[in-house]
Image (cartoon, rainbow, N blue to C red; front, side, top):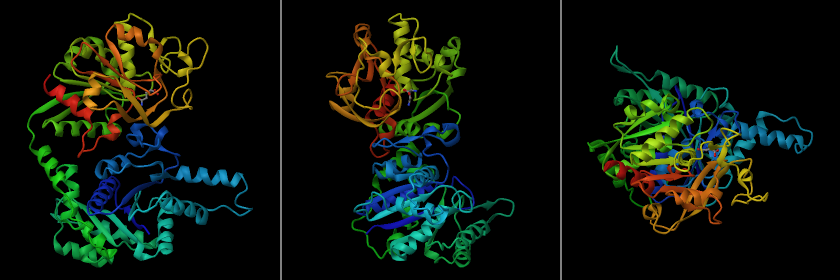
Length: 537
Ligand code: GLN
């Protein structure tokens, strides 16, 4: 039977619960155990799919097509275990399940309540779709004491009673501030946070103390005493120089050792920290810088393109360069300033996006990259914009556009039924096309001798999608005659997946999101190749 590790947070948010959980998962996996990580989000949205990246950061997409919290991206990047739909749940999803059931009369006349109905549903979720995992790490979003997270805290308390203490472990992550004025580490917020947790019936087994400075033994003892946790289980985590150092730092602090000891287990094999040591060294010592411009709508919020930023850094690690990202707000990019703004960049990237604002700025930047032969990568919306730019300026279709943005344009990008031929609906590979998103992993066939085939070193790829609109395949010949080739197609040859330019050193647009599959320990080939092209630009 699986062992369950629950990770809660206290004092303040953004302490790095996701990174701590992901690091622990790596350490356990590396010692021979099968691990799953899940996230429980206390907000009322059914999934983060409709939430603005301004509010909640990036929406991460899993292979099986779930739109999930960006923490699942951290999990995947650190553990190389692909997350699934069943690894993220929100209060909105739980309530919507319960209300549907209630409407069908499934509660047989009972009063439907937070306890037991909501907590039961949370407990079901914790166990769902678990087979032969040794460990299931469940992170609870928010901070202990929030009204929203109360049902989760109650549910994990009940869960632990159900499976027994030998199969469940509580980790609490808190903040231990350093006060400059008195030159002191303060343990009081941790004491209060643990007190709050205990008042809800949970005694943490391990406390991870996030701190800017090393915590002296005396202070650790104090935390141990006041929080009723053995001294070895007071683990400190001091700010790391790069996130890739986190697994090393947690190993040095013996987090994994204490977890295994708790469950009376021994490592099945020796932990392998070498890859993390290697990339930490590369990240910290690399001097050569490559300037990449990301032109998008949500550039001011760092987490809005989390996986993308990570994938670019991975590409840099692979090429021994530091990637310096300049984020440019697309609606501030006026055509007459492009020269000046983009003069010093050696690669231009247009990420995924929705809606009209800023699109003309993106199109002007693409034209600049195409004409000046600057390495260009267009992702999803970025590929659609590249196709529109080419249609307007190379094919001279002046009103070329996307029906997402302008109903009266010539839709070189549109919904499938808008570009069907002879009144017949062209069926794509996904039966839901035409109204909903194409989500999750889909296959694409790569053209022989194309740049992408060389990059991927494969004829078939699987990548993750998140979009409604598609490039109009009816125009394929027109585009190809002018030098933009459709080098990746869906297996049925109906949906363009990749475009590239013949007369350009590196100009690629992809309909999918390669960033979701890049890992620090195995960088995505497309990003490595893009950064390499930028390095030699
Ligand atoms: N808005 C575009 C679509 O729905 C692109 C989406 C994206 O970039 N993820 O097709």
